Image (cartoon, rainbow, N blue to C red; front, side):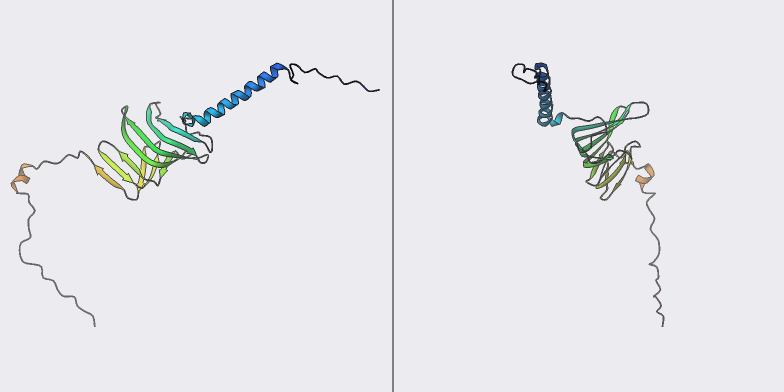
Length: 197
């Protein structure tokens, strides 16, 4: 003897209860909204740390640097940052502002720079410009230690110094008494080189 099959009668023409259909529909709508927002407004994605998901691009990159007392020591910014590997992040239009007594004292610029997270350093072969009130340094290659605020600059290094104090001549120098003395006498006699037979 066969047992008769019992069927759950459909509600409002759907096989699922109405509350399940509403929940699954709203979840799909929310997911579609999130994806479309990320595609339409990618510049809203920002990073305030060096931990960027691998392969992602972050617009308006910003990485604050603090000293041991918690004071702002410097800020690394960039127009874009690309997470190339777990250790390496490429920063486009990189700018470092280093602070001294609460003011920006030094600015470092590079069109393309790599941030190496494990070594806490920046490196570039695309050129770097360092600007301070008293100097301007340019180079093709830069390796910058972020925590120590020091770096090595190589290839086509040029330094321009500003506001150098010019020494004023003293009274003795202006009278001409300290002028270098010329050697007296005739020209030195040079012996001809002897040739060996």
